[in-house]
Structures are given as C-alpha cells and as structure tokens.
Image 1 (cartoon, rainbow, N blue to C red):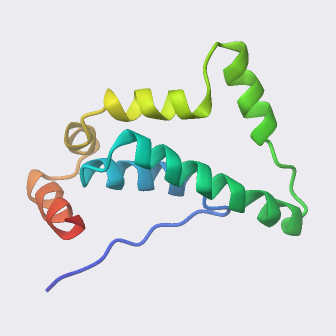
Image 2: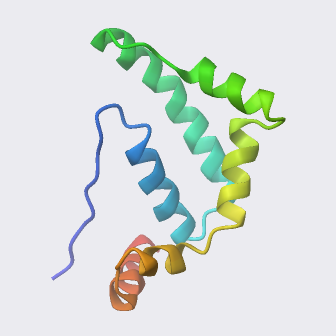
Length: 107
C-alpha cells in the first residue's frame, strides 16, 4: 500500500528545511531550485515569528555567514552539491529499499 511522508517543526524552517532539502535532492532537484525554495520559505517565516512573539534571527545568520565570506545561497548550494543523499540516509539507518521506494514516490 502506498504511503506518504509527513514532517514538520515549529516554524517550518530548520528541521523541515533540512528534510525538504534532503527530499528535493533525493528527487534530483537542482541546487539552484532548492535554494530558491528555501529563500521563498524564509520570506514566510518572519510573519509567523512575529505572530508568535518570537525573535527572528535571520539577519544574525546572514551576518555570521557574511563574516565568513559566504551567503545562505552559497552555503546551501555547496551543501547540496557535495551531499550524497542516499549515502547520508543509509548512514542514518534508512534501508536501501526504503530509499529507493522514497525516490520512486518522489519521482
């Protein structure tokens, strides 16, 4: 029986962003498209943080990356290009059969 994958976190940025990145990369989405998706999501998180009365740290993150001579886009692009998602998931305990099934469902 076919099944889905459900994931979430409090704001939809950190854990959700990482899982989204992994799934998109596993499906063969280009690093540039993954970055564009992440940037689109960032624009939606600030209003959520404000509504929840939480401090939004995006500028801190961008400044920290800038001080290291990089950007969010460059960091994510580098990560995706250097990451073998199937190998990463296997190291985390996901079986080869489950990885293949997941890739098949994504495609």
